[in-house]
Image (cartoon, rainbow, N blue to C red):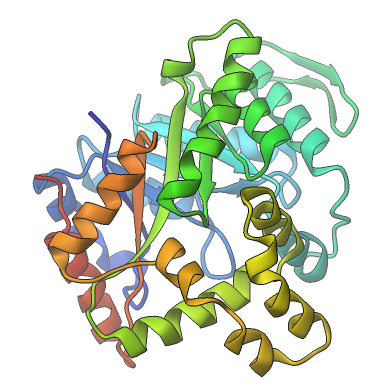
Length: 333
């Protein structure tokens, strides 16, 4: 049976005000709460707070970026959350994108596969509690040791888009984190992760497949069209996501958008997004319809669906209320 999670913090709801929502999520059957890190809050602080408020929820980062923190900073932060929530925390790591890493952060976005591979290997050394001696291609450490070992070490999941990173996730981590794909795309991603596991001599069935799924519970077709175009334009023009959808087979359908975006015509790019892409990548409708579409991801191989609620009200308080309404309406049965 799949675990069933959601992404938080919720849009419009301050961190300190999440206690009731998280405790309710635990009561109504959610098993997982996953944080994100883009341009609002870091991915570790919300989980530390949530750990103090809950008893059973599993937590994960989706993702902690391997470029914006040194590996030992990742190890220390992850160790702290693992101590706050013993046996309930998984560290999700990934490369992010050139926009976050290089454009915003000023760090060269170079060799992402090798960077993720090496950071994963160094973290696994650190989590043994032994002294780390690692001279890898993109990272190194000599003599670092975690001084506090008061909880089980976290599992490590790797965020992956295309085949090579998915194979790495299957071979060298506890699971793959996927996002921005439709239910019909999931088998291709799962097959790559499982192939990596088999090549490494692991049981593919033990590789978790965590998938962030974008959900907007509304029947307003015009609103969904507007939200879908805005979200797809913002993400799928980023080079790593463009390459991902080429790999998935959407290259021909999305090429008019990419060409218009590259020419600087944002309006034409948004208009060029095919309706089928919105249908594939954004779950919407009433509660029963959304549940059916979420189940399609699970049937395709996702073991941890993570619902990312998309509120649409104009005010922060109203957006927070909408997110919590969706949390309640789509709770596991």
